[in-house]
Each structure stands twice: as structure tokens, then as C-alpha cells.
Image 1 (cartoon, rainbow over the protein chains, first blue to last red):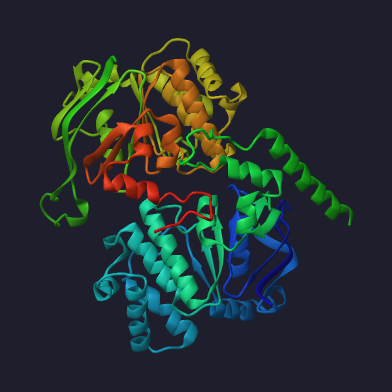
Image 2 (cartoon, each protein chain N blue to C red; image 1 turned 180 degrees about the vertical axis):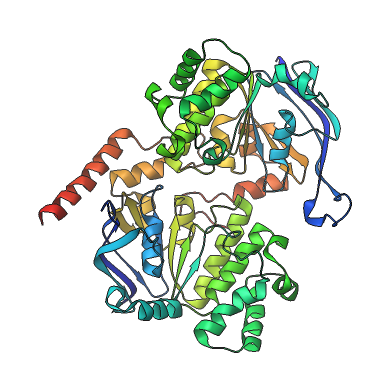
Length: 290
Length: 266
């Protein structure tokens, strides 16, 4: 049974009612890595935020269910929901600079969750933080624990956030574009690190990205989204062997491939976009009539 | 080939504000450590390197947003290394820049038309509306977009506005600093295709700065690979991809995640 099961999830902007997620269903089994792929505005980050209960205030869930280890989050009280999500889920955010508090040293930023969520004492939490930093290959963890974020490089900060996400041994981690702000060589190290940590801890991962190259390196399965609608849900091998949906094919064709000098850069064709928009509109009509 | 830029043994150091004492000057940090190359008219040069390699600093020195601390920058026969602002002004219309983040480089309170017109007005060009319309045509935006605000546009459209502003003065040279790294792959392809067309149609010379070699391949004829303020490799694009010489170039290439689950990542 899947650790995370999302069934027919709908979300919309409060007030105006503009739909943001349209009947999204997906599952992540224990220890599985699922990629969420799409262009900006496709709703990929929105799904991750809905799962973690951190949707922007202007967005409301208007239908469907999110089952975390079998429990429907929407049926829980706000407090129960927060405790349940906090105990079993974590986030690796996109921007390692803004995600760390600039006025606090690194140590408390990692140990807070161990103290708050697991009820550990400071000393035990600190020793765990030291082990975690060593695990993410940070040399001289003691110096880094005393440092402020601005004293560390972008790659180093992202390692700290990865360590921090794994600290309380969550069952599920949402990684929201964790390498988009990094340059390619650092990105490679960080992706390898996430894969290594994920495998060692057996954590399920919901990996939000717009880069199909990244998906092919870290994911087992992927969901392609357009306009808040699931376009394709498949395993990574069959996807890269040949995507089933025309939009997915176009997205893959637009991804640069430096090994193929003859491959021209092809934007997603207008016709493909019109076709997938028509699918979105048809889905909305079905909802309106049903 | 006719030479537009000549850069000789360029050095540039900036104050390191992270280590500035409360009183007194900050220690200086060397960003560029002796860079030399030439850029021919009509050429598209890729400048590649990781963060901190000095690629943006090099670009900014070429358009004299920064003043070099050593060496020479010669633009079309004029030594601009230490030229003052008054001396630079007539040259500025000949080298323009496209910025990385179109959201923060376009004034949110100005309409697209005003944004594209700004450099034209500054340099006292006649027929501003006509030139704005021409620039929008070139980048494939409907002329009606002149009345819109940046927040009403998509990321790809915003970057087109940035390009329109840069080409409005009909410059000889354009510096494009990481202009596609914030875009989706589809918009990325559109913007790169557009630049390629403009280079041909307008006879532009372009320096294209990126950390991602995969976007360089299509557009650039020659590539400069920077590492810690030095050029570690300079080669024709085909040769660079076929047989990278420097270890750092190979590292950059190997780090690009190809959309292929069979690619082995050592």
C-alpha cells in the first residue's frame, strides 16, 4: 500500500474560484521516488504544498482526498493534521539561501525539529545533527554547526537542508526544485547526495522539477502535469523510451541534449498546447455537468 | 575576420564586503586573473563556467559596468578600459545588455512600450514609437503588448521584452547574461531560436554567458570556459563538445543530466 495516496484532488483560488488543481490522482509507495514534472503554472509545486499542508492562504482544497499512511488529511483537525504531517514528512526547498534563517547559527536550525517533533533533549539532538552533516559529506561539521548561513556556499547550504530534511527520519520528503538555483556541477553532487540519502533511509520522495534530465537521474516514476491536470503517469523507463501523451513528447523534445548536435531546439508546438488546453477545458466541463 | 572586441590580460578585483572591518577598507578579492581573447564582428561567443568563475564579471567589464583593474578592453578600435562616463556615453548605444531575471530588470510600474523606449529616449533617437514597434516585431511580440505591464506577461514574453530593449538601439554587440536559466525548456528553446534569428537578421555580435553547456551548443560558434577567473579552455564549439581538453570542461559536460535513464553518472 502506498504511503501517500492522492485521489481526485482539486484546488482553487479562494473567492474567484479559478481552478489550480484538476482532479489530480497519484501515489507514492514507501521508498519510491516520484517526479512531478511540468512547466511553470502546471501545479507541480502546488501538489507538494497541499501534501505538506502549506498551501498559500489564497488557495483552498475543493475536493478529493490526500491519504497519508491511510489517514485522510482533510478529515483531521488542523492541529492533528499538523502533528501527523510534521512527524512523517519533510521538505527540501528550492532556494537554500532564503530557507535558512540568516540571523541564526546552523545548529539550532537543524536541531529544532528534533526537539519539537521527537521531543529529544538538546545534547542528543546536537550529536545527531553532527552525524547528519558528516553523512551529507560536510567536512568539519562542528565548524559548520557554529556558522551563519552567509558564511557558507550555496552547495553547502543545500547539503544542510538535505541533512535537516532527513533528521527526524520522515517517511516522505517533498523536494521542491531543490537544484534549480545551483550550477550544473553542484547540481550533480546534490542530486547524487539526495539519491544516496533516499536509498539509505528508504524514504519516499516527491520530486518537483521542470527538468526531465534530472527526472531521468533520480526518479522511479513520474507524473507529467499541464494546467493542474495529470497528463501522464508512468515509470521512468517507459517514459524515456517513448512518452504516451503528445504533450509529454513535445516537452521531452524541447529538453536540450548536448550529445546530439543535430537535434534542433523545438519549443512545444502551438498545436500541442491547444490540444492539451482543450483536454483541460473538457475535464472542467465534465466537472461542471457532473 | 573584422575584430569588434579585443580583451588583453584583463584583471579585475572587487572589495570583499564579507571580510570588511568596521573601520577601513574591505580587502580586495581578485575575480579576473588575466583573461585574453578577441571577438570578431558577427561572432557568437559562449562564456561558460560555474558560480564564482568570473563569467558575469567579465561580461560587465566588457560593457564597462565595471572598471578593470588591469589589462585592456578594446571595443572597435577604441580603448575603453578606463574611459570615463562621458567618453562611454556615445559608445553605450553600441553595446547593450540582456539581464538574467526579466522580472527584476523590467520596471514593474512601466508599460512594455515605455521600457523598450527608454534607451531610445536616453540617446535622443527620433521616431521612438516606430522604433519600439520595430523592436517588438523583431522579437515576435504583438505591437499591442506595448500597453501591457511586465506582470501581465509570461516569463518567456518578459525575456522577449528584455531582448527588444537591447536591440532597440540597433547595437553592434549584445551581452546576454544567463538569460534562459530561469525559463521552462519550451520558453528556453523559443528564446534561443529567437536570438539565433536576430543574430543573422541584424548582424549582431553576441556574448552569451551561461553555466549550462547544453544551451551553448546550438547558438555559439566559439566557447570560452572560465574557472576561478582564468580561461581554462577556448575552442570552436564543435571541437569543445567532441574533444574537451581541460579537465574542468569535461567535468562541466559530465554534470549535465541528459534526459536518458541509461546515462551513467560517475
